[in-house]
Image (cartoon, rainbow, N blue to C red; front, side, top):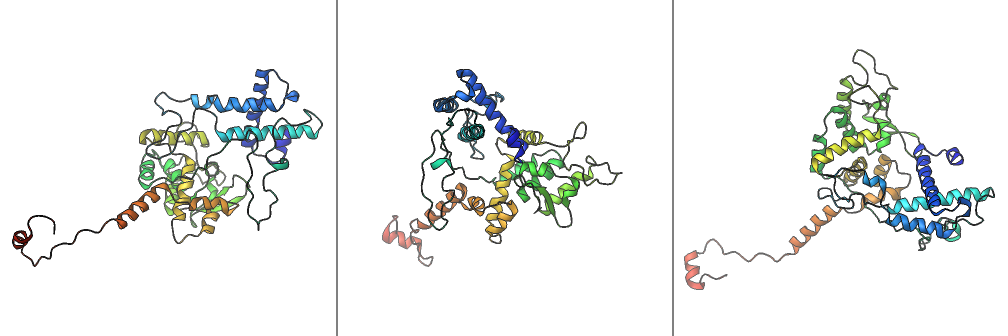
Length: 364
């Protein structure tokens, strides 16, 4: 872990790796095998257990909460399943592979890593392929799970309006308005200070999650207005004192003044979800912002990539896929155009009584 943190890994990444190693150590204690004596079958049995065991994090829910794995009728999103996700199992294998490769470099542990390599020759598949040639298909490595291709889901306009109305204070309204108009990540917005808002240019400055660079992101005028209303309440800085540029922008509204963290903001959204019968997340607002910009004919793909701060344009191209609601509407319109034409109507100059006497009451 010291070697991993020395590589400028974030605190959340170090925490995630530590928990994966803790799970592995508990598994070795359960099967009574030393870490340097583990073999491939031990890793296989761990994967088999993770595929069937319940996740303790899913058990901490209210009795009135929806059943794990069900689909929310309003958003169309599926709740988290009761077990471990496929991405969690794959991450566990990646951490173990890194752990044993590290000790193998120093001559410790087993001579052969118990974790199967991720690709041919132990490297990433197609890592050094020719970009002018098509990508060759490859098989998944042993024990790696199939990860479903999940498309981003945007909030419908009616759900967004209800969600914004459910907010109880100007702070929460300002946060949601900034989220939906800028597309920044949850942690990036919550780490902002008062000096990160440029009211004249209607922009904010955030510290990027990946590169940790200071980047300027445009926001809507409505978001700036809600931020002004939040600051006017005097909770961040009292009204009789000058605004400190280094003071945190988002603080608690009750009790001692302290910076708002991710868990507290997620709880705010959970209360709104319970009221609306939805299961929206903060990251859904980023998807909604991207989908709205992508549907604007005046916004190019490069513009959306710059706003979202994606390093590769391939990450932005995910939002070019057709959403299910839009597809259903277009298909219905297509069938309506292909429907049989209506029967011809009788010219109003003819007398209806004369037509009935000649042809009867049947269709003409």
